[in-house]
Length: 401
Image 1: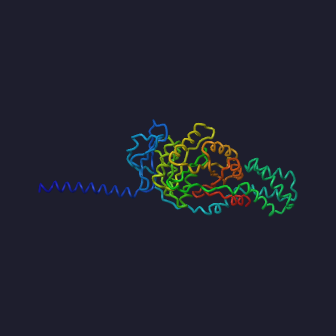
Image 2: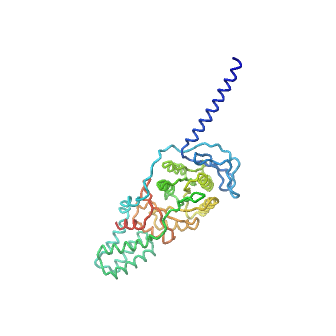
């Protein structure tokens, strides 16, 4: 009996160890997409971070090889994998992308038709004299069309009305529609560069000043991409605004998209951006989107930092898309912001938010004419799926009701 007892104890201990290993294996396989945290050495001068969390699709490598210009401190290489995600949220199915602008057109018509109606009323008068043309010019300027595009449009309309010799509302409306479409320019390439490359994901940066809705826009764009069956990863490089990372992670969780973020307040945003792209490459996702902190365009240090974030990201791959988020209600001030950001990070597209709350739809033309950069997306409301691809003809038709 005394001889059998030690054997029984050994067997029980072995079974306990095997049971623990099996439980860990099952739990690791069931870990849902969530949030990945980064930790930064406070003495480091740049993009040095390591993900502390992995899932079944994005596992932290044993040794992060970040290249000669980015040093990863040794104490970051052996971090335990512990999930620190936000509260679990049911995964939603985003609305289809096709037809979003048409579905939201009624809202756009309601908010912007003052411009179209005003122009049509003026152009349909029995006698169009210099006073009428002055009123037309004033209407266009108040709609934030800009001086040069306004002059262009008025001159073209003057000539066409004179040649046609007609005042019928339908003919005038047709002329106005054609000239507005020409100014909005349907020939500009408004496609988003979100197709995966052979060896890495597409990389998208989202930039802009404080308060324009960048984080919300990133979340809504994630829904657009998920609706297109793309595998997406988010990078919360806005490390200065309180709760920005949690807000982004919540948007991601709604559609089953993981988020790379830092658990250190005020961490180096370049570190988070670098690790997000690295995680996206390792996880073979289709698109990595980087949310950046809002910054005033006249703050040189902050703008330089934004340039640094882009440079650090590009140690692993070219940034395919740099989207500048602008508030449509800011009018010409938004144009000034756009010029400064374009000098720092080479803007590839504009996202115009709050377009449903302003009658100044002319800002679309002004921005495109000034930067040579297309408006690619417009925000038409507060709903999760109220972000739509911009379509020139549909936009003009909504203006003219």
